[in-house]
Length: 222
Image (cartoon, rainbow, N blue to C red; front, side):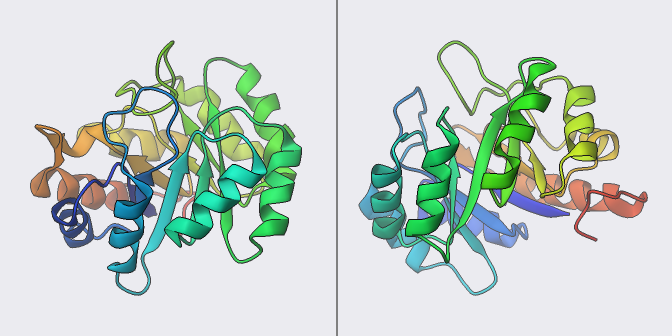
């Protein structure tokens, strides 16, 4: 079970996430919707440069054109980009051509059964899909769960890795993993206190997510 801790804003946040055993850290850059934890390109690049080996750096962006996304990733020097807004499949194809060594994750907002068709549509153009919640003002970081029955169906029918996000926290992540059986889980506000990553919450989240994979799970990384 892979664990991504998103919304990293400082070296302290980064150290906390790494101490919890995070496999990937997410940095919100190129943000156009409401998000209190966005950082500048310069800060993201500074933090990414300090990451140790074997930890993925993920630029989470709302940008919608291939040129903007590619320029952002090159500036941040991250290993992965998470395209979180609605874009055409051609945008993902162009980003992959521009950045052949960078993995591309496409966010799928699970607002209803139509999310399955959306996921299938993007499956050939992404290295992984991330299932998230959204509200009228936010396309991520909502702190709200969505229908895990739909998410489970997507995991069953999609052949690339599927990451579960949306309202996860240390108290519900084990249930989410056992029900949805994703490749990985992604958390942001669910491990924060006063807007910063909390060491005990991060550790409990990662430990409980991984412990839940003791059950046989086809979609897990084990």
